Length: 502
Image 1 (cartoon, rainbow, N blue to C red):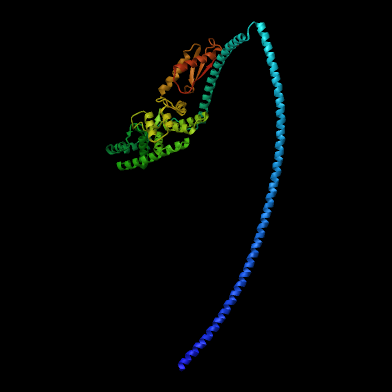
Image 2 (image 1 turned 60 degrees about the vertical axis):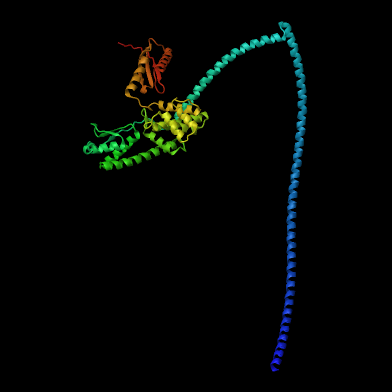
């Protein structure tokens, strides 16, 4: 019983305590809800106030912007009204001018009618006086005018043709001379070095070697013949390939400086010389491309251009000749309004076939066509290269310019070497032409054959006649001789009176 009573009493106590706790919790909850409602109401009022303030600010800004817009619109309206007034005034002025023009036109029409009447009256009077009708007089007048006009037209055509020919020749000379004067290429005549100097004649024996093994090694590795003769302190290199001859020259010079000359050393020096020459060739081609301003050339064509550094034609260095032709063609193309870059490119590559004509069969023109086609050059460049010697027809103006530039470069005084016999023969022929002309006492060829001075016989030739004498000799020289450039004919006449006082 005591246990049951204890449990019941404990239950009653716990229930009382729990109810009290729940009551407190409910009270706290109610208080929290009231506080939350109060805070929410305060926050709501605060947000509403902020929203009203923001709306007021936006309304104020909008009103300001509308005010500014209205001011701008008002200004624009005033400007438009002013422009309309100005246009109205101009329209009024134009209408006034139109009225004046109409009045003038009416007056001119009246005068024109009066003039027609006067002309008709005059024509009637002329018909009565001349006895011809209007149509007959017109036919006679037109016939006379036609004959006069035909004669004047023929004379005028001849004058125009003569003037055009003269102007064309003068313009061509100006373009060519201007291009030559502006061309800054190096002098194009060179002599290919084939003689290697030696420090002493004792070096010849070392170059030959025991039983000739050294000289045979050099000749077999370079493909060049070594001529060791009685020439003091020199060895002559002989071979058709200029690049191989250059390799042999560099190899021999290196061996002479090194002093150790034997087959293995020779092979080493030849290999070094071949690499050095290959670099020189590449650099020479790149330099030519840079000097002329011609870019984007195929690397193999650059190497072939560099090979022309060791190629000569009539004593003229072909690479420098190609550079000069390129510059001349470019300058003339600029004067004529053509593409100077294209003309320069064609001029630089016009002799590219000479780089391989020692190794392959065919003319340098055909070889050049093959090379330029292989390395994808443009058709204009190929045609210009093909036509520069007249083997193929010139299809473009650039081809004509390259041909002219090639002739100019080759014809420059000193550009191409001549043998002594040819040179002396030309001077003798020049003097012979002058001396066999009537009225010439004697003559002297000077300035390397670019001028001839003629002494006329004063008793046979007067001062007026020396002009015709100079012209006659010039014509003879042009018809009987072939020469580069031009020859100045200078005729002198002098009469002296000498007496002695005794």
